[in-house]
Length: 99
Image (cartoon, rainbow, N blue to C red; front, top):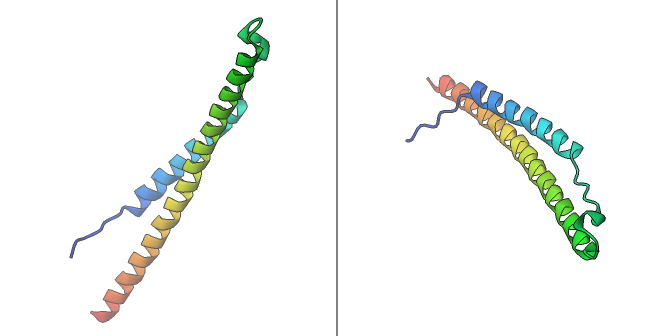
């Protein structure tokens, strides 16, 4: 039988750090929304300015979605670490009772 080993304390710590860093990055990202004035594209290029503004907004939105995905994944990983921990402890108690 192969052995699975997980340092629960280290896993919890790493995931907590990931969650905290993700929150920091989400706040930074939200504070820096793109503001591209259509007129910045130059005279006669308003349609290009609109497209640039829309593209920058969409890129920013995608960045937000990616950070949200990291946050959700970190929460899911934290839950799985706890499931592993409880299952491992229960299995240990069960083995101890059989001895």
